[in-house]
Image (tube, rainbow over all chains, first blue to last red; front, side, top):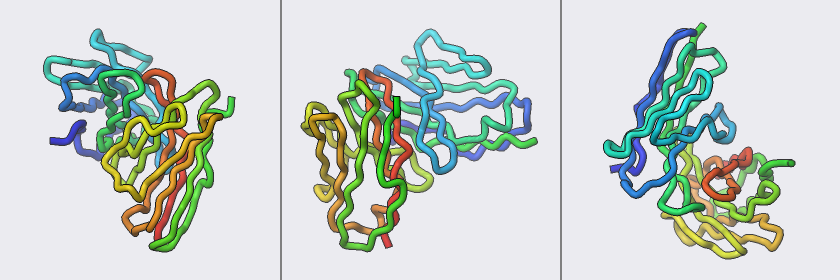
Length: 111
Length: 110
């Protein structure tokens, strides 16, 4: 089983749609969770951290379920500029341990 | 603040050659990690440097080696290049759990 698994893509959605990405992780001792965004041929950039209580940043909402080892990202009112690959990322037990990335899910928002 | 900078941005090498990639971390960051991202895949951890020593290593062969300098900058060396080493090589610097990535070096082995 891969350490971090994500929904296979691509997701092709119209502008204004709501889209949800799911991710599961295998290491129950994982402590930190993130969603990164990666544009084509660019570096990954932190989109948001994910907390057990859930967190929201504008149109983006992230949820963490530790019992199920499941992470989600919801994007509301999709924009063309949201088109990118979204990477689910898990960190280890202590700080400065390496990030473990999922394969990524490609989103294309269509006009 | 210049952020994380990597050089070169693109590189073409021949099988069997050796390559050195460079990374300057974000100001104030003392930990540098290197990742390999093959086409269509997520980044895979190669190794991490802290206080000029390799602190952790991923599942990569000994052909991959590195170094960290007193100013926290770092190098990634790959010997005896294989076609399968073609990838985007990313450097990330961090303090605590948040990592910032450089723009990467795209290595093509022919």
